[in-house]
Image 1 (cartoon, rainbow, N blue to C red):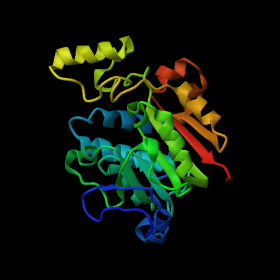
Image 2: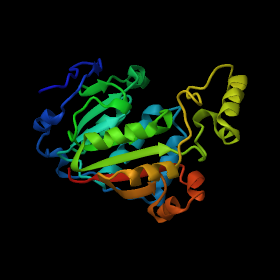
Image 3: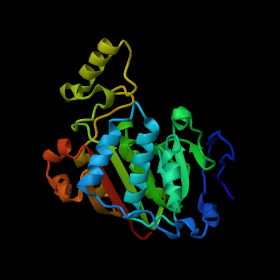
Length: 282
């Protein structure tokens, strides 16, 4: 395979300019196990209730939480772009739960993460198609993937829309870009410093340090930033090479999708927003 260095073992590779087109030859034909397709994605009230119950176990049972979230995410992406036979890049892939879920639906999964430690959380190891790199300068060629995906990463970046631009760049014409991120004014916007973040990120950080005796994992102004629905929509509409085809609260039922179109209200009520773009012709 030309141009991309990846690992066959547990160590992520440090890639230069990369060409992932060769991965297409590795996409297997639909297997007998996949002949019975996984349950179709349904943004129902029951699904939302299951997700929020899983969120409660993030600290006590991370395997349960991340496995459930990854499977739900793969189903959601599959509702916008058929994964079976597709080459998918996950920007900020983390410790491999998403790899399992996307590959179970037939995708060839390539992950990129800027933090090798994140790839090994909860005793897991990075997969064989894992690249160590930065989202703001993705080490992949133009139009080299079918789907570019990012989950809960943009709120941790000082310039999130540079990464979003890069995701569009590496997606082929007719491909799909799926981005979701946590909203600052939502109930989990400050992550472990919530709900005090609504009084100011610095104030919430200082309170956390005073109460717990150490800095939060996500430090406002360093590894956590304020992101909004309005910024995402403005960015998406500014792209002349991709169309915004989906805007929805990621975790809420389909019947509440309308909230994502209501300025101000959506910033708190959506919790987490999903942007879906379809890449136009070159």
